[in-house]
Length: 318
Ligand code: 1BO
Image (cartoon, rainbow, N blue to C red; front, side, top):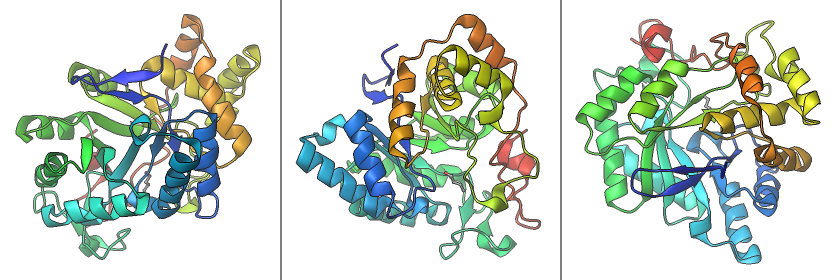
């Protein structure tokens, strides 16, 4: 395994990246510097995370002080839901580039298949959401295509898209999405969606690969199963003298998807990176396959506001 993903045009992307959702300003600078020092070259960002300016400073300092070339880095960011209107897409990407202190991104993703009013960060009521009939995903996508034309990003993709929504883009878009970033871990293995993506040469990035234990309480259910405490994962970890987190990351790498574990702890940043050295046997992979619960930690219920037209059923198309 060389831990590289290949695109149809010959471009490549490092499979393992540093996630930055919930990495607080004041912490994320050191996390990114440490990650680059230990060998990460892929950093996963988003405007929503509110920390792109600090990440930008870390990238700039790493490039200046460690002689890392821009071309050696893979930087992903994401368009937030309140900038889906075509007139807002390029300006939103420009803000991200300014914050990240970059001339271009490697990958720009539509963060959710959900459109919100410009002044809404998270919807508080149905009026904050705009239905996809009024503002279709394909219109947002066309504006993202223009960002590639203008050299602001090398590739474009989506996040949290079902096979149905990917098909809409594949049918109507001029460019195809090269990536679908989705929640993916042993409790949510998404094999049908993975197969669809494979058939259509769309790569997948696994977010929340460790079960996102540190996400906001409002997004948590009571008594949810904890992936890092799973007895099968813990047993396999023991056999490899590894941590459960390392096994979860190695599992994703063996599946052939990109994976973006978040950490701001220097030791864990290093340990997570070293997961790429772990080789899981076929029987260990099979044991982990047996753990699927179709359990979403991020179930999307924040968008399913009655009267908005968004429901959990039409969000996930299942
Ligand atoms: C609303 C959650 C975003 C994670 O990428």
